[in-house]
Length: 168
Image 1 (cartoon, rainbow, N blue to C red):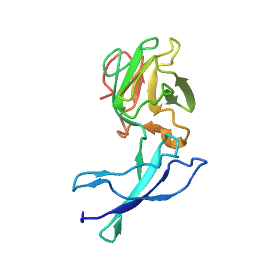
Image 2: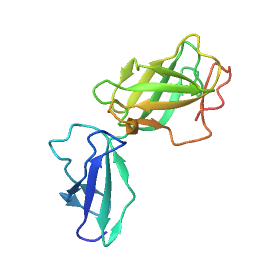
Image 3: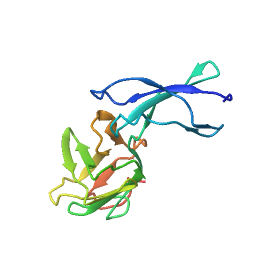
Image 4: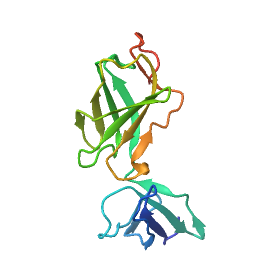
């Protein structure tokens, strides 16, 4: 990256207060870039891109949930009535997170028993059907960009299957 850069920042994920502004770096290196979000904008998920050396980066989301891995009460699986813990970053802001379990078109939304920016812990319903589920997390910000699935397709959560083999 050259010695200068500028970019645009806007509220992300289709928020109603969609607007764009230029942002200029406060600190710039080959590995990082710091800029200020306008003080008048409410906290949320923002989309930004960088313009440097005549090129423009792909849009990137800031403050979007980023789930890395999960563990159940059976290790790689979880049992109905058991628990599931999800680890990552930006998973909860102001204790408004949610976890969505999706299987065969049926969605089950759970409020975490414990939540912080780095982890979510949910209790699973005792009547949860055994099977594979997509697990999505919502960090509490008011947009679709606040929902995110772990970026490891092909490794769904398994609940109540009796053997810890599917989730890593």
